[in-house]
Image 1 (cartoon, one colour):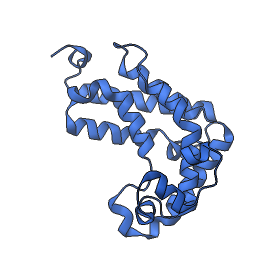
Image 2 (cartoon, rainbow, N blue to C red; image 1 turned 60 degrees about the horizontal axis):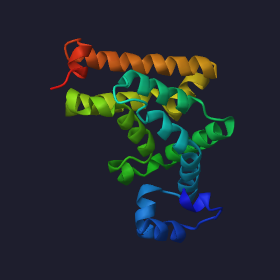
Image 3 (spheres, rainbow, N blue to C red; image 1 turned 45 degrees about the vertical axis):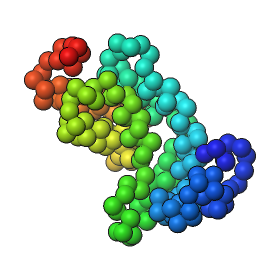
Image 4 (cartoon, rainbow, N blue to C red; image 1 turned 180 degrees about the vertical axis):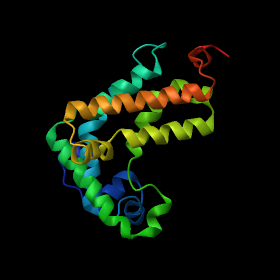
Length: 191
């Protein structure tokens, strides 16, 4: 992302040198150079707005507000970023024939980081198993795949898709609360 932001058209060797890794390591994470460039471009365009969305607005801000802000920001991408996101999905799917790479997630690391940041106040309180389940469940209802299903499979407008993602994310948060005994106070009370 930094090389692209500098206006450069980097090679694999440039990327490896900037990341202080070998070319082989670059290809372990990005099966093609095209996928690396698309991922970096999407990241460069989306990173700052979503980072701002998941940053706490106040120390006592509700997790639900942080998650909703993240979901709405992820949906508020210009059409050209959505086209790049669809291209990234295509590249990931086309690379699915390489099972040796399946041990490591092939993409989505930013989304997981954003979700974890939005949920951060709950991490210690919900326990590791609920944490992993909630992060993974939210990753299924926000992001490119969810938007593709909303628009292409369900025929929803961008606004209706956004509202559906907000609803689904909130339903997952509420299900986590119910798993803990249904008490919001339990999550917000000091130990």
